[in-house]
Image (cartoon, rainbow over all chains, first blue to last red; front, side, top):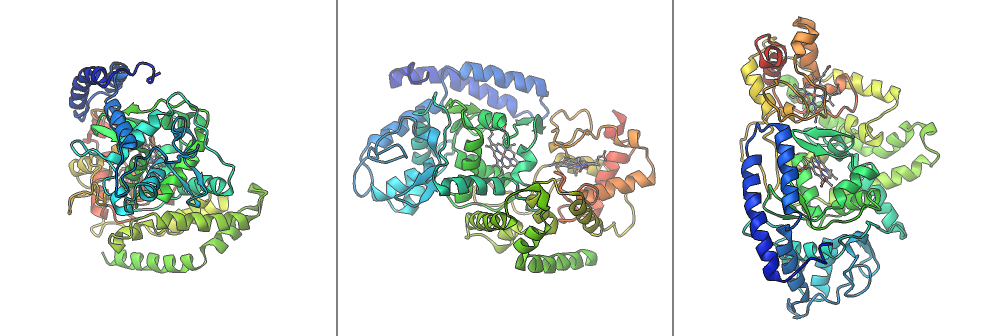
Length: 282
Length: 228
């Protein structure tokens, strides 16, 4: 859908101006700690509607497209020959089928791991350079996140359909399930504590049951996402690494194989969910 | 304090022992009726997943941070049974957890409800890592509102746990209830193995005195939990 109404960059920027004003207002609202829950839910629904016509992530998406096509790195080549799983240069629908096993690398990779791989092997960046600025903060936008946002958007409208043909893919699903239920840390958390039941919330945030298809679809189909409270786009690596921070666990490497295993498990549960990417979230 | 040091030492010993033979022991524990698959395959996968998980953490951080990933026996069993252990395992966990509970030196189980209210509201403390850690010395909160309704004036409460509004009023203001509340917050798994509720005293996340303050928040007739 988004693809059809995507006009010139200028038109998109104009649409964005309105949504950014709306977002500023929402940020003020959600900043109030004891805000009545119903009111806050209403407001978020309202802003979602206003934003339906102009997600600020679209600007980042456009930058990602630019980055994909521009020759960069020591070898001065673009990423246009990068194979995201459907063949070199084929981006449409690729995100809907990630993570997956890549024979050339001999491992299961998600969109970020794969982009980093292409930046290294094709553009000649070092691993450190390719991963240095892996997440965005307002005022410090990440190239990698922009690329992920653009790649994600090229699967907009497609069904999540992650392959489990290769034994390593099947194994990653199971390892993700193991990690999902693993409890540790000074608060005894596991992913399942917060995401293993239907219809609960933590403070005011509704939590879906990610161990069931319905909840997993609802969550996974709208990533990567513009996060209103963060003022920028978050990828799934960023999302899960932050959940681990909330769980009071130590910090992961980037890109994290444990996150890839969890993504594999969750994408698998979410199979059939139609992507609406980039999404927009609290 | 002394008790604590001893308990931590005991836990450390238990960890060393259990990590020497965790998978064999877990496989032996597994009820044969629950799965047609050989337990051995599960154990191999679990060992692999465990390694993948631990190897995914940034090694460039203090040892104490990475130690947070170690599992005690309750954590390992709860993970293995996806928080739904068979009755015998459940009973075993609850018995062991009950034995970890320590009481305040002064013996007062009901402290100051105002301090308890603050602790129940705060979700701060204990976040680590380079991206968004808590400032050094940030006091740790109990974060009870993340999962429970308590005083009605706080509307931003979660629902992972049951409502505790009117806890004292409904349960009674007696010593036995205060003692139960204290023990529950100290080590929730003493009463329900593999519950989603953290073990605040066991992990020394909160001190016995802080837990007594939280008990007052639940139990004092003047506390907004019971008054409003």
